[in-house]
Length: 425
Image 1: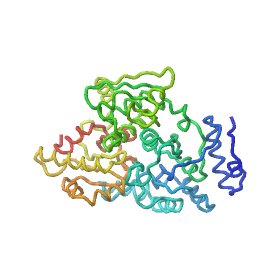
Image 2: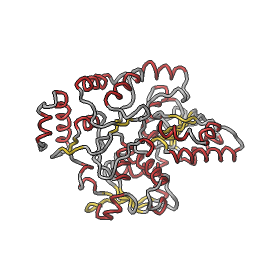
Image 3: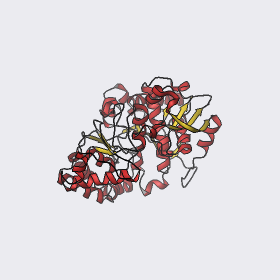
Image 4: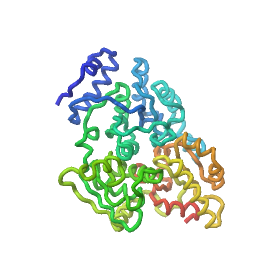
């Protein structure tokens, strides 16, 4: 089915704004037609976000494309943030790892960063997967139409903020920001935002966000779930604690499945406004109790070469930690070390967060207190750090189900992680 274009959209397609802009529009039109879109709608969000932040040597076609766009003046119509950088000299790495990172894998990082600046990067601190955090200044409003691709960000802004965005691919997201239009289908439509699953949470205690999200993601895949019973544990207010929980929960639904939107009864905007009217006819039902969460967690494979190896590294913060989470983790590590009679963590541990959040945190007393525990604070993407051959045999632990899914890292709950890094067990 052909997409109906407005006069302005047709003019762009016809080349009135140049050949390059015409190609960008044609790509978006073809993308929309593949998914059954019948029209293009304006991108109304104030800022964009790009998922492609890493200067991998093998991504030469991307760099060539960027050069063509910049030369033609086909720049982003919005300032944008971008996913985290892959490198930080403060994060532990041996000589061989550093050689592979800097000389072979991410040798294009500096030149790509310059391309991003020319395209419309917000500022040199705007590298984070959690771009919607208050400190970043890229928090969409309810109803905003976006052109984003980062899965953990898309599911958060759709679900928690009530913006509208499909799970786009990299580069397609940039094209939407350049031309200012995206094809209307899927999660941009009222029908596409209806829940086709009811998830009943019947656990005896607050479920681990990462495991609950994982269970739901693997069950519903790309569908939209309506979740009942969760507010018994996280409350009916979208405060900092609830948002942090949903940040990690949503990232797990998006990476362990392909969820782009969820509704939580009595909490998320559309569920509060529409109640069960947001549920489509004949939904499927999934009941999650303690036994089901245990079954899901026990199903995670350990793909370390030596399953009994002592962990050599721990990553916390995928997606990036919020400011409140950084403070809470600092307190938790301090208290756990005190209880175990130790002064520093037993396993090299890296907390990751957005540069702007790090700057805010570093102005508090907690920064030195965290440093005293031996924990390293970084802005990198743990996934990109582990995206190399040497990490296949490196025993890394994490409390992130996203990182577990995409790498060889081993998942533990936050409580289990805390015990391991402070007791060495």
